[in-house]
Length: 282
Ligand code: AMP
Ligand code: MN
Ligand code: MN
Ligand code: MN
Image (tube, rainbow, N blue to C red; front, side, top):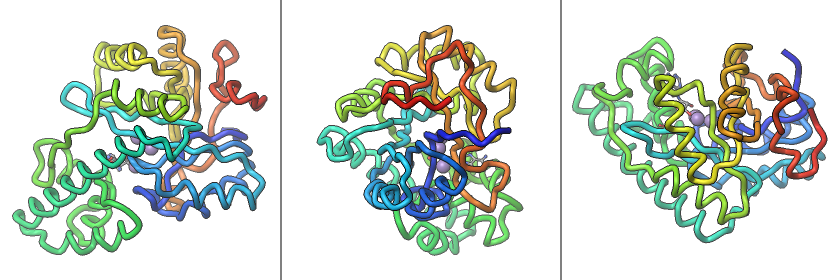
């Protein structure tokens, strides 16, 4: 896989990433990325630090976010790009998502304690010291405490629906989150379409709901995805008339199979979303 000059989906310690925002920017610059976006889960907290680091590194860093949205009985992720982090509607929406996340973290900790894992709450507080604990922090704490062999195992065993550490969240709707992004002057991107456990029909219905809400683009490439994923996501982009975005969804330098900027080019028959900003990268 080539190194792409563009990576529009990256996480930091502001949510469940493992590097501070400035370190994500420095690492992106080092990897040859010229245009990036920091897109932490339901928070705008890392964006100032990222912008400052981007000036030092001489890299184009757009303000972003990854918002969780309720869909059917589950959740889809909508990335917002090039938005104004001080826009009131967005700030209020994010505050609501953060409140939900805080309540969920409390409930997960309680449920795990009741199941005999009382040590998890403190571990999670340490791991998520820069923000609100997400499920990835719980997964890591469960691994560190010896309750699971790795993070996917921790998710399967404790954190998925029906498991002892599961707690539901009342996320905003797709309509609402696309609205917040647009009212902040940003572009809305349907994130990693092939990562949801949805049937083909259910996935199309979710993308249709996103299009109806006014969504702009879909991620045709995500970290760890192969040729088949690129083809399938590109077919969705064409079918629904969406522009294309690419982003690694990088979280952790200790997971080398998902590296910053290791992404394919957008197929020539699709429009890269960054053309909107006049950027000529392939
Ligand atoms: P949350 O938004 O707090 O519900 O957590 C979702 C995050 O957990 C995702 O963005 C991933 O970083 C991580 N995640 C979800 N499923 C898994 C899995 N099976 N294994 C490892 N990490 C996962
Ligand atoms: Mn994550
Ligand atoms: Mn996601
Ligand atoms: Mn992500």
